[in-house]
Length: 469
Image (cartoon, rainbow, N blue to C red; front, side):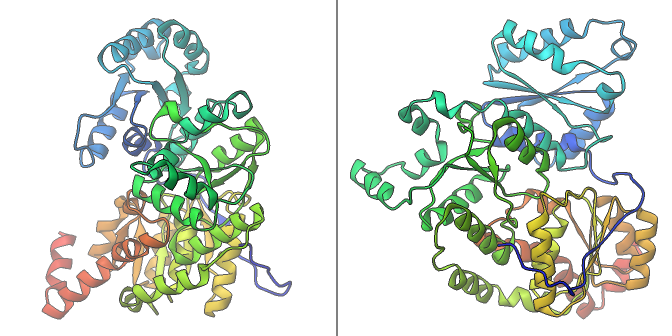
């Protein structure tokens, strides 16, 4: 739902400071993508530094044998003394023999950019030779921020989606993994009854890697409006990528997927639905309403659904109401999170964000402006690529109740008496849809509740002194 901005309404203020990305490395997208795409294998091509980062960053997240590996570049590779094709062929043959995945994803790092390694030129020849699709994605920290690693992978996969015009209806239904999941265990008569409840509309594909429960939840929310999805990107299996054709609609569920959105429009001639993102009950309602409006469907029961969710989380909202929350910028979820927290009654003086695509996030920015108007608070200042030193000085001046920041600054700020929350936690948590509202608020309010409890016990000063040592 795009808000209508009156001519005399104050506009959002945008600034850009350093031009640097102060974020996690984008190759960390491997952590959630290899688990999401179950028949995939990710090969990160970089130096030992990249390997150390992945080992440390993903060590806390892996509970089973991972499907990723490092192709470590040595001096011989960097000085062009070795044959890149022969080395990558050897590694991919080992992967095929040991794992036999449906797809191998090459993740390019900073080093492959600097030495100009021609991954896109090597991949098609090697793919034909070993018989496994090879998708090349650039996820280097020179060009991309933390979560944009996923964006480059999904943008590369858009081109690999089959052509819907060349598929039979039976084959298309067979590839629709989410529909098969919803129909699991049902009788033929029940499936036919469900099909009758759908409205006849142009095919719609959603894109963005979210946990399976969130996929099911958002799919069911759209099903309540009579909307049948043609698929998700990424699918649980590479062999179940959604079929695309010119005129299909596509809608993203995450704010950092602007390149994927562009790939849908330019490469596959799909139409993008520019909507706010389904984060928080307000964003979820606006997202569904915009999709319904584009597909010519009258939405049903969304106002009541949103009111019910707000009522169920009032205990958490009371903890946020009246609080000041500052975003330093890390995962590109900042604008959506700030909009939701302002709707909860908080004030947000500044939103730091590593990268801002005003076209892709246009509907979200409009909803942020409308939310500030309705809640009677000042518009936040949006700072792209913020300078950390300047930001910390502003934090000292503003003394916010909570700072949502990358891990590097959390402990130093805590030692100076400022409550913090790691922004990376929102990347891995379930934050989409009506049903995830309590999960977001649980994360946001945890430091406030923890430090409030310590203060009541008189232990807060001891904790600060211990942290600052």
